[in-house]
Length: 331
Image 1: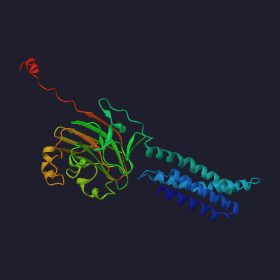
Image 2 (image 1 turned 180 degrees about the vertical axis):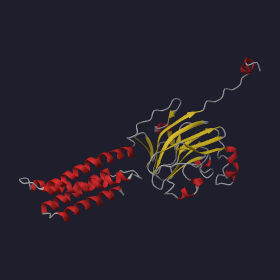
Image 3 (image 1 turned 135 degrees about the horizontal axis):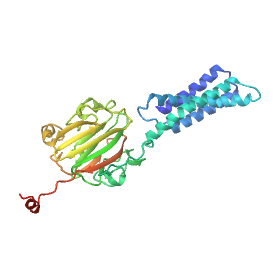
Image 4 (image 1 turned 60 degrees about the horizontal axis):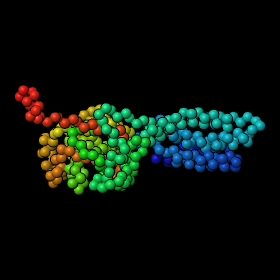
C-alpha cells in the first residue's frame, strides 16, 4: 500500500512537470532517472505501520513526488547555468521545503514501527522481564522457529507454532503490550499444561484481535480483550490496528482479571465460569482451566503479532501456619 502510494506520487510529480513546462530529451531522461530513484527509495522506506496517521501518508506521498521533480530541476538548472531559470529554482526550493517537512515525520514513524521510538522500559520492582526469547520455547517442542526478537519485541514472523514460557507460574500479574497486523488474530494463554495436545485445551486466553478486520471481532465473546469464548470485555478502548495496546492479566487463585489500555475489561472467577465452559467448545477437555500453575503461551494463529515489555510478578504465597506459629500467637 505505502510503496504503491509512493510510486503513484512519483509518476504524478513527473507528469505535472511535463504538463507545465516543455521538456527536452535530457530533461525527460532526468525525470525517468528521478522516477526510478524515487521508486527505489520508496521500496526501501515503505514501512509505514498499519493505521498510520494521515500526516504520515501525506508526507510519504509528498516526498515521493518531490524526488523526480528535484531531479528534473537540477538538470534544468545545470542547462541554464549561465542565466536565471525561475521554474527550476522554484521547483528546487519547493522540493527542499517538502523534504524538511516530510522526512522528520517519516523517520519518526519508521522508528515507531521498528520499536526504536520506545526505549526498553524499566522493569518495575518485583517484576521479571520476559522480553528475551531465552524465556520461551515452542509449545511441546524446542527453539523459537517462526518467532524473532526485534528491538526489544517478540514478533511472530512465519509459521512455527505457539510460544510457551520456560517457567510455570501460579498466581501473578502479567503486564505486556501487543500490536496486531490488519485482520490478525492471536492471544495470550495462561496456566497452560503441556500435557494437553494444544495450549487452548488447558489454558484460558486473553484474546488479541483486529476487531474491525477479523470476523471474530463481531462477537464480543471473541473480540479483543475477551476471555476467549467465555467472557466478553466491558468498557474497553482499543487502539487502531498496527499500534500498541497496553494489557495485563491478573490471576489470583480462582480470580481472573483482564486489563486493556487501563480498563479492567474482564473480572470473573473460575467457579462462575463452569456453566459457560460446559456449554462451550472447551467442554470435552477436562483439564481446561483446571491448572493452578502453568505456562504462559503466545499464540501463533497465522498472523503477524508483536509483543513487548512482557514482565511478570508472582504473588507471594501466604506462609503456612505451623505448630510453632500457632503456639507463639497463643492460639
